[in-house]
Image (cartoon, rainbow, N blue to C red; front, side):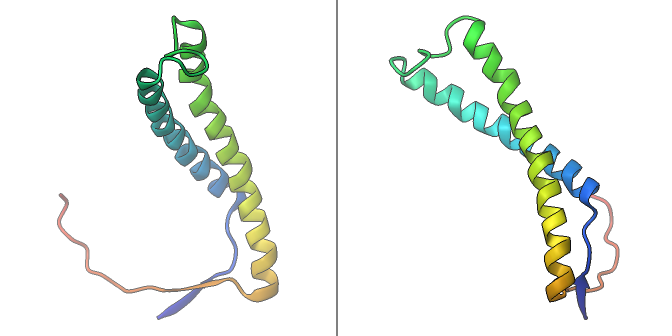
Length: 102
């Protein structure tokens, strides 16, 4: 059975994207910390002391979360405009029986 996504809730998508980007920021931070340890001669040195390193630990995920909210809202708003003109994305849904909890 074919269904069409006609509108996307801007605020809801912005919240979801904010959390997803926060999680991505944490993942990227882990990689940055690992690679900075492997290359002590790089800019900032292997995150020396609490200054630069602790700032990155807090600011990078927060920065990604803010970007997620902004771009999530922008994406939802633009999708709604384009879907209004072109009809939206079609998806094929299948009914499934509820499975036992894991």
